[in-house]
Length: 323
Length: 279
Image (cartoon, rainbow over all chains, first blue to last red; front, side, top):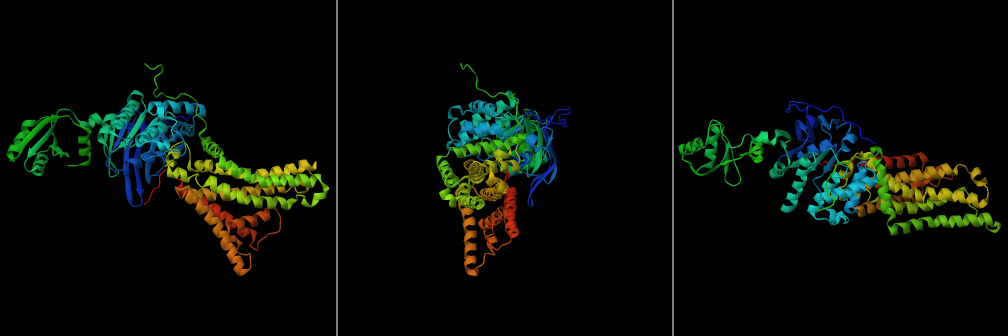
């Protein structure tokens, strides 16, 4: 039975043209008791690989759960793939794949039975579901372990099988909640490669929720930065980063805090990183000489100055106002 | 070089009706239960009373000397009463883990992220227990009725007791509905199937023991409504049109059973969710 076709897609105002919005949020508010998890979130997310970035407790998982219908917003409208979340949950959940953050499986099943069962739950005929279960298990790298009981899997393997169950029915939109949690470096790289392949080579729309900047930067083209339940920044990563070559990494000797204050008074955006290195954004009409001049004027010794490229960390820090 | 590159590819096949997804849950659950040999042993035990009754029916209809053993309408009421023990064991065995195991493995978010409503999920789980409870109540009783007619060579008994088919069906339904919903509700409240089994057994046995104590002290059966099994017996007597065994009005016993069902549905509504919000 063919799935119902989505109604006319919502245009993305940011894109200018009538690009179809995979997810459209209009003043979405979710409260847990007195605590606001999402505050009037408005965003229009077009297709491709989208990163949902924010610190722990920012509201990323709540947003995914609201899109799935697990959490009912107190206010606002949400549309996924053109369907209204409140009224057309069935149609939406038939078209999306969800990889939860926590360990999740059906007890007592081996991997291929589990993934095949998930395919059937998404409406695939039993034979097709089993065939696709084998295929996606090979794709995620569990081909050799597909007859093992899922409960015996390592953390990394459990992450992979969660991805497999989200993929088995060929969703139009993948929701990935912290997909690299608990994985070793090699497994993490492989998982990110899979997600990148899905979002770019296989053209699967996906929303990746993570608090890890490199994960989002490696796999996504667009980013939505969420902080304290609100959208802090939103758009293509390349555009948010700004032009290359206007960022400098600085290490100084002296009163770093006072120097940062001075830079800000001079209208320069800057933030300190964990490694005692500050990153300074310099407008087109100024350059490294101005930084040296400011340092010399305030008695600060510049120990290190290097041109750098804007990173997602800069976007994140600017959006969140971290210093 | 691989002959076939094992990679992800889009699916172009047909998809089933999403409103039938609950049947996938039911089918998978039934298959997993049937694979357990120990459970098949319990199922065999549950059919022993049926075999005894079939032998009784055969001899009473074939040999006039044992006519005293003849099966009458009350026999069916007694038979279903006896099957109550197996209803209890089957409910505990199958039902305790139905939702509790899913909670333990965080499977609810896997299920509910599919084209499946919470009600359909519960329906799928309930169908598993329903099928096996039907197999120890309604099915043997109806088979016994048919075999009795077959042994006698006529349906005179059935014609003169035509109320038995609806009575067996209605009582079995009431008993199964109460057992299924109350067990599912308990199963949704914990991640441990053992704890759920103990809770269910505790509620059934404790309310029955309390009634027995009150009955012993007061010498009256007017408070039978405090026991769920006694309420079920009272309603069963009314359905089979046999003499009521307790002084409690049937309406009160019915209200007790309805309350159990209502509370169970309310618990399921609150507990079966993709995400548990603690505020």
